[in-house]
Length: 297
Image 1 (cartoon, rainbow, N blue to C red):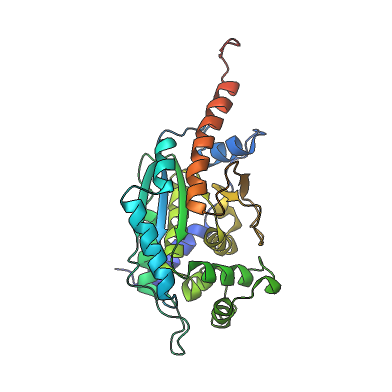
Image 2 (tube, one colour):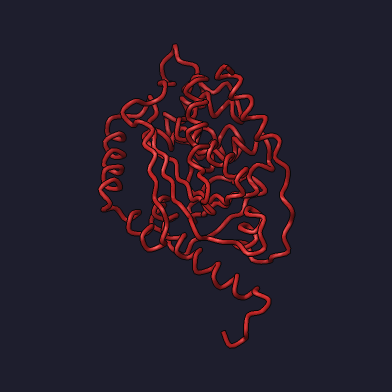
């Protein structure tokens, strides 16, 4: 039986083994991303899912925890905007509450050097990997929680994706100080959270399953940078739903999409709204390229 450290290194080795997928001749960015990820000339969207990954950071305050608990309650009760958008997009909605009441280690404490010890880090990676179930042909994923945004900005800074002048938050500065200038999965484990590790696991497993992944937001961008540091070819099946107010860079080999629906950077809602747009877009593209389609159709 492997130790948690051995399991972690096996997952990283798997990530490093990914090579670029075959290129497609499609000029449409959306269809090209889907074709490349699914390795299919006719991208499909029969069983999509929006996965929400929620976890708390040890340094987060009670006000933030209360906000996310209310956010989770509205979704669980089926009365949130995200619920309605997933119904409109004919998309599954799956919420993964990684125990908001029990956060990871408080990295602000002087005697804490790693926010996610090996065992809990590997457990979170595996949890995300198990979210990629057979039959899914598209995964939209959003990772968030109390403290997630602060840790994400710190990770972006460590990977050179965000300038120091954009970081004016004291919590972010404190997290950066505890990072020892680490990068990749080392940084993800040292200052990241369970929801970030789970998203990294989801993206890794989706690559094996030829399942496209659509993400958005600061936390997702931070995870993408950690993965790109290990292997830049690990993101070819991913697309990022962009916002006009983004103040950080994104990794190469990443499809960047712009949503016609902007909901004040509410990333989960934006993802749900874009799935409806994506379903219609793919219908038109697949019919446009169908070889025997009558012109009158």
